[in-house]
Length: 103
Image (cartoon, rainbow, N blue to C red; front, side, top):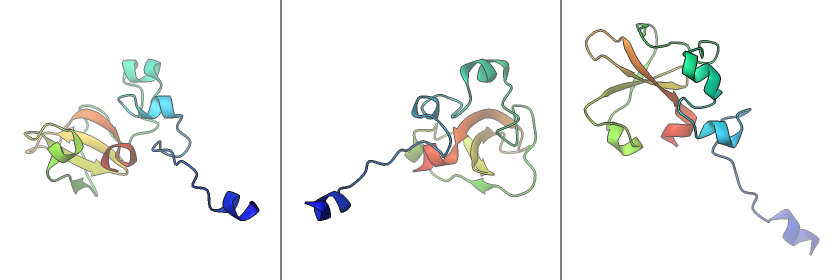
């Protein structure tokens, strides 16, 4: 019986590390509602609305595959997903943590 306990699967959490499951489901992900309402999540995400993404980023192809608008342009930068202007790379929306969205 002890061997059965060793191989019993343990459910895993889809939430990013250190993020409570309730906050992981919110948008923006892992940002308390008061901070999200104020747009005060600069401490967690590297960019906020109006910023221009510079440096390394990954273009998210087929965004509708992840429940995003297929006509939008989305970047993954530093583990966060942003909707951006395709021409200027200006952040239009903070979508959330890539780990919660892209898995």
